[in-house]
Amino acid sequence: MSLPKIPLAGVIGSPIAHSKSPQLHQHWLKTYGIAGHYIPMDIAPEDLAEAIRTLPKLGFVGINVTLPHKEAIMELADLVTDRATLIGAANTLIFRKDGKVHADNTDGYGFLENLKSGAPDWQPKAGPAAILGAGGAARAVVTSLLDAGVPEIYISNRTRVRADQLKKDFGSRLQVVDWVQAGNMLDDATLVVNTTSLGMIGKGQLRVPLDGLRPGTVVSDLVYAPLKTQLLETAEQMGCVTVDGLGMLLHQAVPAFERWFGTRPKVDSATRAAVLR
Image (cartoon, rainbow, N blue to C red; front, side, top):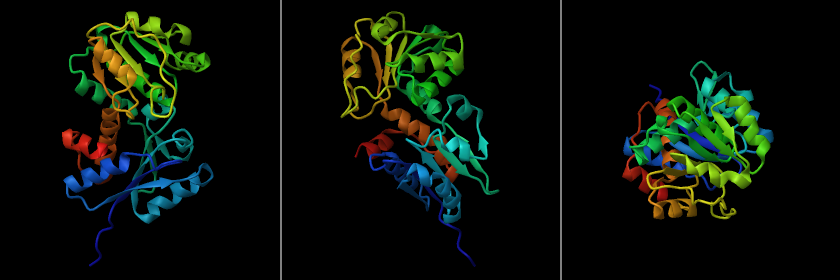
């Protein structure tokens, strides 16, 4: 009698040593008593196509994809979800039993679930959102906010042309604001989201004036190292509802883990603790 293969999953990127995903998935595998492994793999761009062909043969059921592969991976997949197409990037691959590679993007889902859990009173239709940054993460956030029914989104990026591209792709509910005027977006916003790397350990500080924030405004930062960024610190002092970036990482992993290992994991305080260890 042959034993079933142990399912393998993992994350590919370059560099990858900083990723918290292995801690997260190993915690869930252990919690739910699943015989499986989750492995970080540093794969160079020139080896990407070969890796995607080889991994399923080695027993991989799927992988997460991080920088710099999130866009290139779309070309290598057989099936791409509408969400991933709209965002222009994939963060999750499922290696199907029929040999097809299925690409999806769960970042927007993770962002919205984190927001609902960290700011349960936030009402999408209550007013505009202000987004700092216009990269891949911003695209995922914009997609999820438009889906949720946010009436208008102000967007500002250090390089304006990227923000203009977002407006072109997502339409009239987006308004582009020059980076030097970014502070003015906060006056009317009921939700403010930093999708840039500014404020992260080792990166520059976010120097947008925050005096437009009001008590009750929901402020979310996708940066989670440090867990409480200067933006969240200031917002908290001003009476805002703050949501850190770690929850997005945890929630975006839920649909992937379920597809790979057949169990839907819960995001709870033990999950957060496992990733912060």
